[in-house]
Image 1 (cartoon, rainbow, N blue to C red):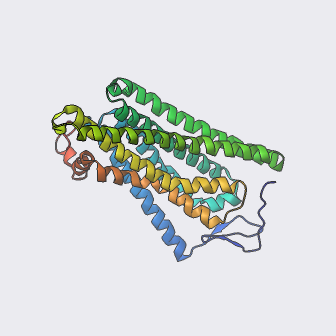
Image 2: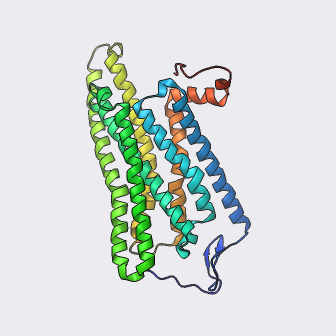
Image 3: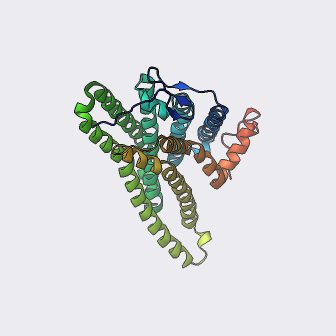
Length: 327
C-alpha cells in the first residue's frame, strides 16, 4: 500500500516550508532559510567554477588530450550540469516540497538527478576499466583504450543514464495514473533501478580496483628487487600510472562516501518512512560530491596545478600556452 500523507492546518514539514490543508506548501522567509539558500548558491558557484576549470584545462592543453583525461572531462561535464541545473532546481524545489507536490517541475528535477548521478557512476566505472588496462595490461593499453574506444564508453554512459532516468519518469507517471493498484510494480521498478544504476556499478568498481591493487603491489615488489629501477623507462611509466590510479581511486572513494548514504536512504524509503530531515541532508551530501573532484585533481596532479595557475593568472590571453609542457 502506498504511503499516505496527512496534513494538519499548519503542520511544519520543513524549516523553509509550511503547509496548509487547503493550499500547497508555501516558503517561509526566516533568516535561517535565507542563509541556507545563500550557502547552497555559493556551493553551486564553486561547483560551476571548479568543473569549468577542469573542462577548459583538458580541452586547452594538448598534453592532457589522453583517453583517461577525456573520461575525466566527461565526468566534469556531469558535475558541471549538477551546478548549473540540479542545484538551482533543488534550492527552489527541495525534496521535501516534491514529496507533497507531484508537479512537472519535480519530475524534471528527479529525472535530471537520476541522469547525472547515473552518468557519474558509469563514468567512474569506465575510469576503473581504463585504470585496469593501464596497470594490469600496460603493453596493450595504448592499442586497447584508444580515443575511439573511450568515445564509445562515454556515449554508452550518457545513453544508459538517459534510459535509466526515462524509466524512473515513466514509472512515476504510471503511478500517478493507476495509484495504489500498481504500487507493487512501481516498487519493483524503483528497486531494480537503484540496483542497476548504483549497486551493480559499485560492485564492479570495487572488484576492478581490488585487482588493480593486487597487481600494483606485485609490480612494486618487482621494482624493489630490480637494480636501478628509476633508470628503466617502463618503471617510470608504471609509477605514473600507479599515481593516476591512486588519485582516481580517491575520486571513486569520495563519490561512494557522498552517494552511498543517499542510495541506502532511497532503498529504505521504499519500504519505511524515513524522517524528511534525514533525506534532505543526505540529498545535499550527495550533490556536494560534484564540488570535490576539482580539488582532488588540483591537489594530487602536478600538471593540473600548473594548468590551473596558467589559466587563473590569465596567461592564455597573453600567448599560446596550449603546447606548454606541464610539470
